[in-house]
Image (cartoon, rainbow, N blue to C red; front, side, top):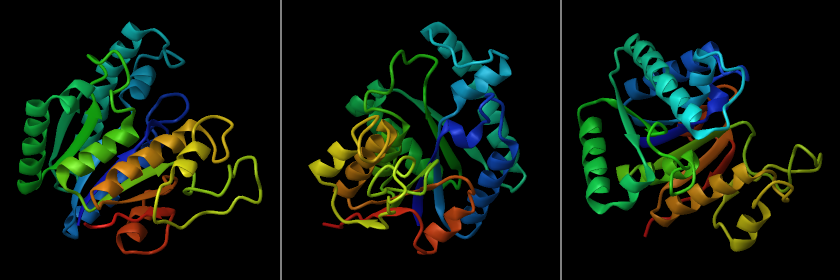
Length: 256
């Protein structure tokens, strides 16, 4: 199976901005094992700015753009060094791809990106993709790394996108404020009403983070790609997902 896994900064770092060693080592071990089992894996990884904050001992995430970009420049080196070192322990080669919103919206650049991605997979490498925060002065034009994960999944013609996050999946209400909220195991269709319910802070389904995940799932479902939203607390959950066990929320991609 060709699968895209998206991880966020909260999975990779502690609140201090320093590397969460246990989480990152487990993630790399699991992804390496999935590759050993024959799966083609693409990793969409946040974390450059967060790791740069820790490396530069800034104490908190900067608010001005030059410092954000400086932190990204430092953090991207640290992030890829960490991935390269850990995946190398399991005899896997990683490749870094940094993109911007302009790359995704420019036909020739997007085609070059797709060609590179497909060739890396043919060569057995594990592509690691992130927004190029050092030159991009706004969030990626398509929205965020959840949506970037969907675009990568579409470009790679993947079968599955997995969005690892800090909650178990999509609920009937915000589980952090409503004890009666129930996990929704399967979604067949993303309706306008569902998108509106997840539209932002204070909405029925929680913060705006869920809205971006639903948007990403909708982009994938258009192309027949399934999406799973699941908790990143233990990266070993990826085994359950790829072995078809009910974990998180599955958005079923319908083949045309």
